[in-house]
Image (cartoon, rainbow over all chains, first blue to last red; front, side, top):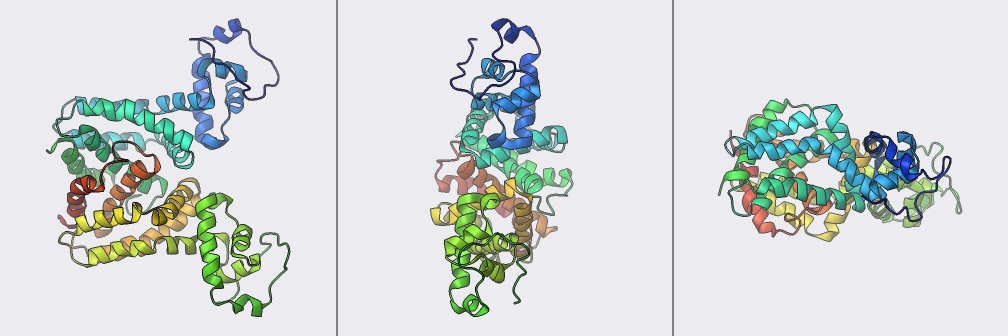
Length: 209
Length: 209
């Protein structure tokens, strides 16, 4: 990987540009920057998060962030990848067989959203994508490449991408109503009650021709 | 209605506080303020919209905005009421009879969202509610009182509020994926294709026991 060109990047202060040796020295440096990026995007949103703030939180120079990731959008994309790592479970769930996939998907959804550790960064991504087209574009590309296109190969319905996305849209809506806007009774309903009604819908979208 | 107390409100410039006579003179003044409020919230979002900006856009003094509506949150609530006026159609759709209500609801949803004049302010409200708890709270109260509680009286299922909201959540999710994040193929799909698959889901939520 070549160093990204920090073309007129964020103003640098303090330690100055790190030497290549310093840049590549810490084996955990990239992960530390990524963790800081995820936290900054979560707490400050896409708009207010900056390469400089991420560098500061990670205890490195801004140039090092550029070196590892490139632009702010590239860092955001990398943060989305990490945040959505649990979403790989969606792909596995469908690959495990279509029988009962609707219910497994609904259960998986709640396992991710009911856990504050995975919910918080997801909420941050939704907020960013809803308010900033640049963030929406990155999320869009990610969802297509990593979720829809991987799930569709296991579906045996006409227009599998469309079906997978329709199922996803229902989950997105439940997340919006329950976790973002928090409208009752859905906001406090037992996940099992929701799963009982939603699983057959997902199953129908994924398998019924 | 008594005049709201402009407790240390937005700093006023220019024309100074209007006399009560001036305040009540223009019969269309309230509507003009409301139209300006809706536009300001749409264009600038909940956060950046201000009583002062709304007053300026309506060509009135800030005190007049306070007089008619109260606080910024009160103006926002009034703007939501106007924006969601078409949503009354949802209530009528269900009240017209449960037979085929799922499909009528899905069609109604697209008639509102495919029209830029009604879509733009809805997008603004979603953006505001997703990023500002104060806006979310107002939207939440509105959705409960004006939509869920009115639709539930016509449903003949156990837990009608929960059912109505589950149907609503699916529509919210489609709006998010199609109009906000714009993920393909849902973003460009023919509404009829979506209606064909979604209508049975809505029907099941609203009527199947």
